[in-house]
Image (cartoon, rainbow, N blue to C red):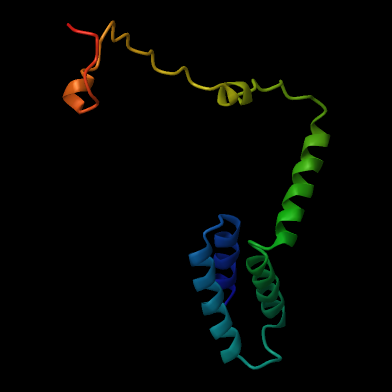
Amino acid sequence: MQHAISLANMAINKKNWSAARYALSRARVLADALPANVAVTERERLAAARKRFAARNTPAAKKVRQAKATAAKRAGGKKPAPKKSTAKKAATQPKPAPVRDLGDRFINRAALGYGPTNETR
């Protein structure tokens, strides 16, 4: 049971959710097979691992991650170098294709059925 719980914790740390789910299910089966008064500390560890697994995609987990990230940024002391802005490049429109010069071409309106025209070739 201790081995299954430690595997679950390692999988949760590595964000390998399918392996964590499997290890937690194995640990739960082992915990259910034992009497309630046996392996109390392992049951507590299993409950803590289940909580961590359940909070993997919740808004609460995201808030905790953001709080840790801002705390880590403050602790450094150094300001990071400003990143080059790619917003300008994305905002500029691409150049349109050059318009082809067709020269002095006349449409033969008589051939299209619009009647005679004065222009001849």
